[in-house]
Image (tube, rainbow, N blue to C red):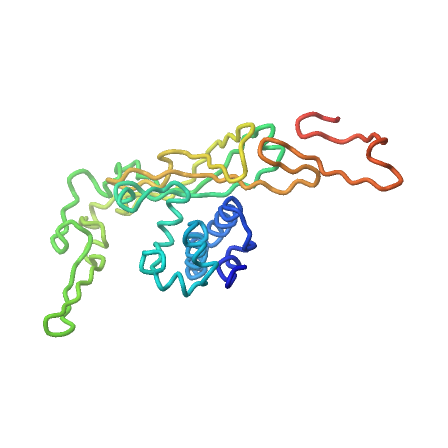
Length: 287
């Protein structure tokens, strides 16, 4: 018996939930409450991430079941009771890699696709429109005519300004803010030299059609990855666009591993062993 069910309630699962059930619950909630889709639900996204971080780890889950959230915060797992960044958990779950890797590569864009059991059984193709940042073709991502951009002297090209504040004698605080002179770009471009197409921003928001192939036998929660199709940004390798399959409930069939089970009810007046009926199969017209 568990001491408290708070983390289970956040994910909407029972305390007896399997690891696969926890993954499915986190996947749906994390995509729903991600800050990119729900900017006002940052706290909810954080709670979902913390709950999954604990319950997906066998040792932390055992500790939580015995002592509740208090035991986790007291650092019984050796981690000092601290939680990982919600975005790190999300990126690692959906294949975004570590924070150090993301510094050299743009973040991934994750979308969820609703699919039927027929789609997973027979295969399907979807054409989906996505909005993404793309380098301006007119200026080739420079934001200006060639050679017109100059390094911002206020931030030395870093795009950030560092200020040091003295709090107490011998104690200082270092604060980094976006450079107001170049708006974080690290370069300064005069108005007359700015690209007219992108207004000096170097990128444009554009729509792209992607053809998503759902192969036969794919599973609920499986990812389809378009490598390098994420937002483009000068000097950074684009991230990926990831589509996550979300299987909808079927009225007659249910899937268990590689087996499809047919749910059929019959009355006592028509014993199942003696009557015949006609029903539509997932792959064959009628059976």
